[in-house]
Length: 333
Image (cartoon, rainbow, N blue to C red; front, side):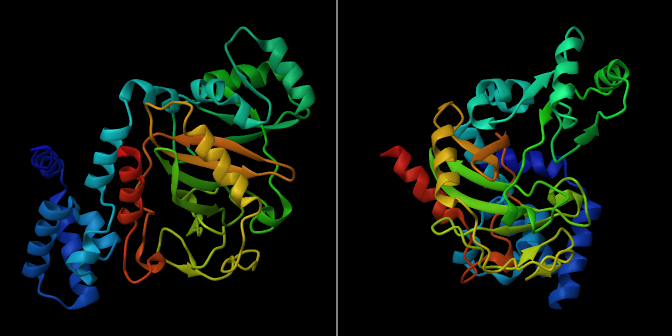
């Protein structure tokens, strides 16, 4: 019944123009009959809770029945969230201030909430940190995140400007280790580690590009999976346009073969933090490896599924759902 309700909801909100654009796109790539493609998209929606975006993104037209059953589609991802994440406790992750308060010991850097009543604290913060990060508290995908240089600025005017722009969370800039910094020095290149009931189920390195200050995939960034056992990158990185990279296009640093520093510590801190709020069991952690430590940048209580198991990152065309099911089965026991 839940699947039927989900599908009905998706159908009601569907853009039929984009659906038929997808049919045409798949037809151009495969030469398959358009009607058969449309019927196959409908079938995948009914069978695997995959919308037309999933169908095209994960190239389900090139997968057999078993391979399709291993893909984490949007519908399956939403099911996992509904099962393991209590909406009341998800609010802690929705609000960056609440998150920082709860996970302060994992941040390992200074931060301050601008309240309109703490100008003196802000001045002290600026004296200590000439440059800092300013963030809105409830945006995602890097929206509104800005590096602020307080040098030679009127501090009171800056304070009021940040308040008026709703950038009320300011943070000391995390310093990443040299090895990761060398990949793309203009951005903090974070590691997205996904935990499901205390178990690391997948991890991705996100690398900035074109000298952007954020590493987000939606801001020209690159993304590549990390082997969760040894922390080594074994695939090409991909950008949103589908371009693949063995080396970073700006710095020419090797991506394939890159080993994440302090990888076991990265996994350990994420597994430990994932137990802090047991009512939220499915979390995406954004981690920075510093010169001397490992720290959190932020976390996401609604991990997006679109970067899990992209075609260039699959082994034997198998998706990540079996790994997720392993974690769920361990939790049931």
